[in-house]
Amino acid sequence: MPYIYRVRTHASLDRLESLIAERLKPGADKENIDKRIWALFGERWAVMFTDLAGFSRQVAEYGVVHFLQTIFESQRVLVPCIEEFDGILLKTEGDSMLVIFRDAEKAVCCAVDMQVRLKQYNQGKPANEQIELCLGIGYGDVLRIGDDDVFGAEVNAASKLGEDTAGPWEILLTDNVRQQLAGDKRWRCEPIDYVPPGARAAFRLAGTGADGQ
Image (cartoon, rainbow, N blue to C red; front, side, top):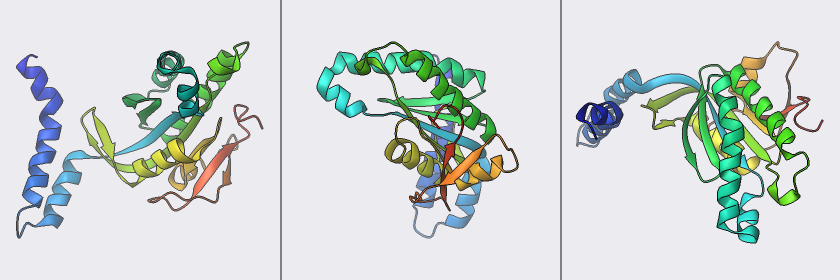
């Protein structure tokens, strides 16, 4: 790997690791170091986590090749949508994707379009080849480490909503996202009982035409 490429891809992580190491030293001024970390890496993003409904059951029932087919097909359908709405796909883990957007409303529009595209994709396909998407979206200040990862309360909340809480065709939002949509009559947000750690409240996006309502 060319040296300049290694510098570009690892400089942020190296700097963060050095600051964390400094923070661990006895007598370290943790408050000041934390400010330095946020000054270097703090940014405001909408964070989306996607997950495929019933995926573990399908893997057990149909095998690993079916597993790979479903992942590849979902990404083939969804990645162009992410690009159209100016999202950045940071990473994939199994059947999940982590995507960031500068604008919370664009993240929501992208989520709705993702659902629409998959419903169109599913038409005429047998049940075991259909793809059902769950989504969670947060918005707020995060630590962005290059193009590798993001960390923060809204990241954790979006992950819990998208990967653990949302059912098929559901788009779940933190209260920070709902506030960004306030005043726009296109969106209807219904509160849900579960509130993920790091969020004040959580909501289900309803009446989009992609959620079956």
